[in-house]
Image (cartoon, rainbow, N blue to C red; front, side):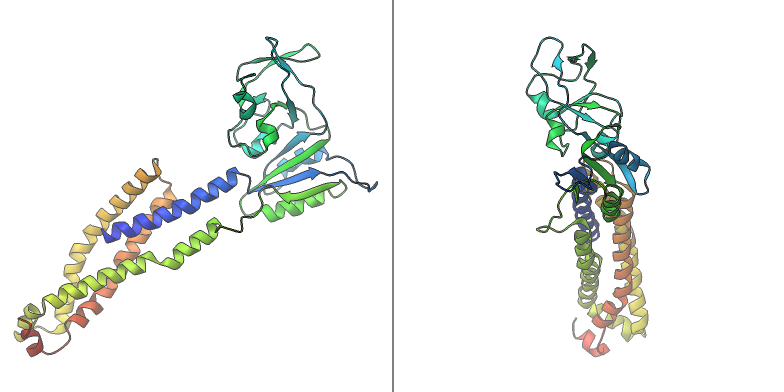
Length: 330
């Protein structure tokens, strides 16, 4: 059970760290935000170049880039004569910054707007110029920019000025993304900032994982199991004293104790691995990643090997003393 607990505890802590990282990424921890700012400096452009923003999709380390157009967009109404709906025009890859599998040309309704009951997926829209269109998808509930959750999102070619450009970087490249955006939009009046401010009150996933490593659960459990070997061997001192009286050496007795530990511990490690993986899957309520399964196996294997390495020392410590001393314990 101690082996299973070590694997389960480590996996649970690892899941906590990875879940936090997933949540941070969903909230935009890898996103660079380029915002249009009013400026009196005539040497700076007054808007963000849509083409420059969209071109970043081919830059190294960039997973998606897009933005929302500058100015007020023409607003549609529902085909059945409903209220005017707020609309935001976005470049083709804008939604992919926040939702990697989003379509490039779908008209999307924000969840906050949909909850008002004015329109939903499948609703037909009527525009001022007489054209009609259909809302084809729903934006994610957790879409970070509130302006996207409360509007109808209409794809538009990236040939118009933008009010804001979002750039999602690959993991580990956020700083490079900030430098890249600053260089690309150097002639524009913009602020280049991380979308998600750094959280200073809680440990980030990397700090959490280092805290797990510093805890060394495999060392603690191995030490506990070695102590159990010591206690069990100590309670058999009278028996081992008889063995010694018939010529068995302490080294031979130590080897015998180690073999007994191995016979018990190796099958227990297999069962502990199964229990830890099953327990973690039940907690996670889903399929575990290969990395997490590998972590559980490594922790339990490390604990088992360390226990086997410590067992001879624990047994030898329990067997110390003379034959007479051991026989007195009978």
